[in-house]
Amino acid sequence: MMADPRELLLSDLDLLKQVAESVCRRHDAADLVEDFHAEVRRRLVDNDYEVPRRFRGEARFSTYLVVVVHRFFVDYAKERGIWRPSAAVGRRSSGQPGSPRRGRRG
Image (cartoon, rainbow, N blue to C red; front, side, top):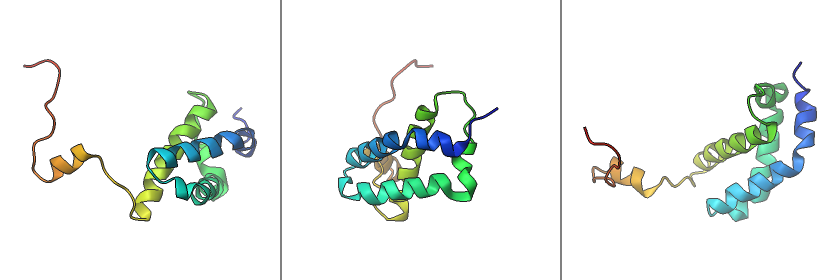
């Protein structure tokens, strides 16, 4: 039987804070850590712990949380208009050629 989602979250509260800080720093948004961390906690308990209940046990719960928090940041940044796509995406969308592809040639 799957563990209680609330208990799973309580066991990894420190990890949630660390991942929120790491993601914000990586995206040059260190000033948003507290707000983002609160948003992460809110989203994890929304709809009766829907996100933790979706955990299938195919990896460690901590690994699942790291991926979930990264995806939350993408949504969070887009909602606030601070998402900056990579330079390669910008080149492709503007019609400029991207970097050459590596690998086998057909």
